[in-house]
Image 1: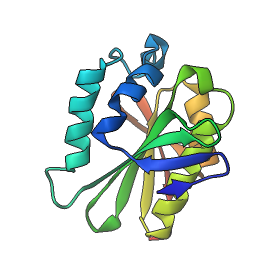
Image 2: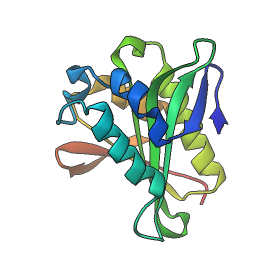
Image 3: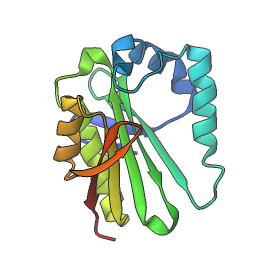
Image 4: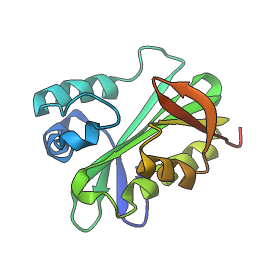
Length: 163
């Protein structure tokens, strides 16, 4: 488990699916990434796949749910896909709509980035839609900078870690 001032980052487990389905139910969360909210059973199946780990033994999937301390409720997720030999990690974050605008995504993503840097992972990467100012601010707070590279229409942000 990782912890921040307001959050506990708890390793993702399929048992989180029912509560997370409610957290992630707002269709607006998919405005920049596409898709639609998953039902609790579909989310549970996804979490079972994620909890089982990457089918590539050289890749590690690190996934956490964000538990807001004091309230004890889940409010989002952070994740990292860590490449072979700790050469690269791709970061992603999501915070449910009711909890956005309070710095929780930044707090969680920075904790994840700090943890990855301490491993040490060489390169931290995130992909952010060019119109998603809030996610760009989170990436910048993690020490990532935009690059000229695009993937599926998103800007690749990156920062050299300590690796």
